[in-house]
Length: 330
Length: 257
Figure 1 (cartoon, chains in turn orange, brown):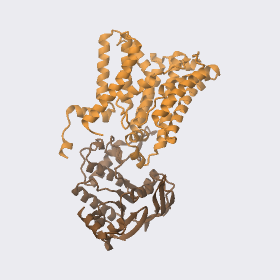
Figure 2: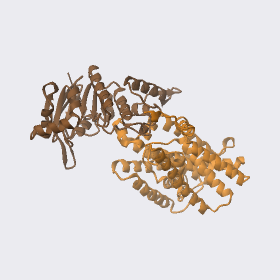
Figure 3: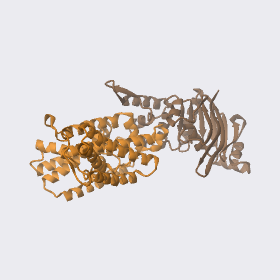
Figure 4: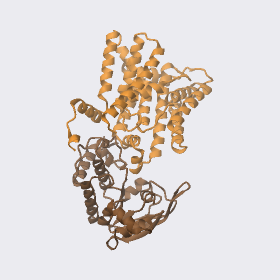
C-alpha cells in the first residue's frame, strides 16, 4: 500500500496530468516544438505565415484520416483501408459531379457516402463474419483502390463544379477551406471521444472487450458504427483532396494510411486500444506535417520522406511499448 | 418472494453440453451458495443469467418477468449485477470510468449536447468506495495499476452503485488475503440485511457454509442438490460435489485445504 502511495517524480506527475486533463502526451508536444525549432533554424522560410498555412493545408487530409484511425485503433480495431477509401471517395464524387453532371451537393454527398459504405462493409465483415480487422481492411485496401481505377477507367476525372472547388480552394478570411473543415472536424471529434458516452465506450471497448460486454455495451454495434465513421471520414478527406486538386484521382491517398496511423500512434493512441485522444493525434499529425514540409524545404527527395515516415512509426511504437514495460502497468 | 427463477436452462458450446436443464430459485434477500467441481457449469449458468450467454432452452424470470430476450445492459438495469472472476475491468481507465461504464451520467452542454458528467462520476465513485470502507491510492489512476484487492474493490463498487436486487459473485475471495476475505464475507451479510439477494460461487466451502442460507450443488450440468445451510455440513456438501464415493477422504482433504 505504502509503495502505491509513494510520491511519483515530478516528470511522471506532469505526464499524468497532461494525459488526464488535456488528453495529450507531453513528449509528443515537446517533439513537435523541438522539430519546429530545428526546421526554423535550418530553413528561413519555415516560419513564414504562408508556409505555416501550407503545413496546415497538407495536414488537413492526413489529419482527418488520423482522426478516423484514432477512433478505430482506440477501440482495439484497425483500418488499413483509409488511404484507398479516400481515393475511391474522391473518384466517386468526381464521377457523380462531372460524368453524371449531378449538382455539386450530390457530389459532396456521394464522396462521404462512398466512404461510409466502404466502412460499413468493413464493420459488417469484422463483426458478423469474424474475419480479423487486419485482413478485412487490408482486403478493402485492394478492393477500394481497384474500384476507383475501374470507375475512372484509370484516368483522372478533371474539372469539378464550382461549389466543390470552393471546399478545396476557397479562402474565407485568407484561411483555406480544407483547414477550416479539418479543424472543425477535429474539435467535434475531440469532444465526442473525450466527453461523450460513445467516446468513453469506444476506449473501454479497446481496453477490454469483456468488460465492455459485461457492462452492457453493445460491442458489435459500436464496432460497426466506428468502422462506418472511419470510412465516412476517409470520404471527407477524399472530398477535400479532390476539391483541392480539382479532380478525382484514382491514385489519391496512396500509402496515406501509413502516415495517418503513425500520427495517431505518435499522438498517444495505444496501438492495441484503450487509450487515445484527438488532441494528441492532432499533435501527431502536425509532427508528420512539419516533418514532410521541412524535408521538402530542405529539398530532400520524397523517396527518403517515405522512409522517414515508416521509421517514425516503428520508433513511436517502440517508445510506447518501452514505457509500458518500464512502468509495468497495464 | 421469489426474485429469480430458472427453469430447465440448457446451454451447449458446439458439441459440448455444459448445462442440461438447470432449475434454480433465489428469494429476495437470500444468500445462495453455488458450488461444484471445475467444469460443472457454474460460471456458464451465471452468465446465462446476466445475458453474456444466451440459453439454448429454458426460462429465466426475474421479479416475475421473463428476461431471456433482454440484452446484458437491460438485465443490468433491472437490478442484476455480477462480479466476474476476472473482474472484467477496463484496466487503462480510472476508477469512476469503470464503476459507471455503460451508464455514465450526462448533462446537456448548451442544453443540446449530452456530455458525460465526469465530476459527478468521480464524486459518487469516491462516496461508494468510502461506504465500502475501502482505501484506494487515488481515484484518478488507471485501475490496472492497483493491487488485486484494490481492483476487487472497484469491481464490487461497480456492482453496488446502482442499487442492485441480485448480486452474483464468481469466486470473489479466490485471490484475496485473509483480512480481505473477511471483509467480502461481511459485505455479503450486509447486502442480505439490506434485502439484496446474493449468489456466491466459491471453492472455499468454509466461506460458503458460514455466509449462505442455502447451498446449490451443480454437478455435470445439473442442480444435483439443494441444501439448507443450517441443516448440512462440510462432508455432505463435498460428497454431493464429487458425487458420493469416498466421502470421508474427500471431506478430510477439503478440511486440510
